[in-house]
Length: 363
Image 1 (cartoon, rainbow, N blue to C red):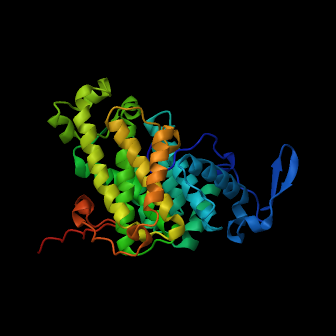
Image 2: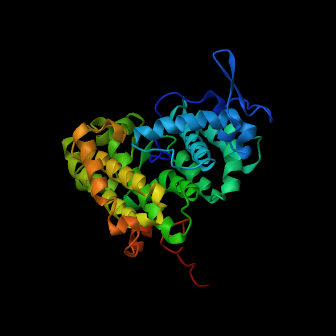
Image 3: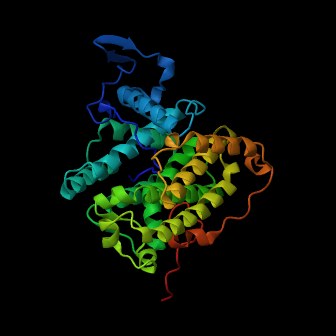
């Protein structure tokens, strides 16, 4: 599980039209259902999306279905931004699938190279890529974030071992925070200070994802738990592969959960930078996903999505959200504390981070 792990996991079916040949321009409002023509109301699809109507509508359905598994309500996102978000989501899912579902590393590398060629204009894009690029250009998304995203995907080809916390944070930025930075403008988040908090949330979500995926990652010969933390517990990557539920992993997992909490806290401290219509959804997602990671770190059963949490945990989180909905910090009536640049020290010079690029040595 990589991009967007934040990325919202798919709830099952994938839109076949996302990679199939797209419809010709002018056929935007016509779809086939059970052998009959079904007219899609024109006002439901922005003109800018018309050349890729089947792809956009399929992504819209997949995104809405998956968002609900995360207790998110996508309807407050106005059209066409909602379809732009859906395209970004499906783009990241298909990219992720290109790595995770490849039968061998060479196949995955070839797939990633095809994505790079299509994104750079060296090859004719498939409908999903074409629709995404058109959406990104119109919304002025930071396409510079695509390079670290693709690099993060490539780093998962073959065995994975992570040296230390800094290396894990750089990986988390590539596969998670970069997606958050692509999403932020679609939700009306654009200023530099807000981007620092977007990066924090992306890092935190990925750290929680690491905690949730120890067993599954071990089956793929991937160990994202930092070697320095493992060594402190008298373990190494091979021990994790052999016994991903090893009792001595407890302190390692709890330490990583505590690290994630630092980033969740920083992200939520600046949540007022998110437009009010989305703000409480961001708070709920951060708290619920943080809960999942902490449950996994304590050795308790943890579902992959918040909707799978026990009813008591769901009720507790919803109650906490209601209690903080009118808090001055949530409403933006109180200025957030300054961002802690030490949180981004490992990412110096990367887009959206609160750490300047290191200076070149004087000649």
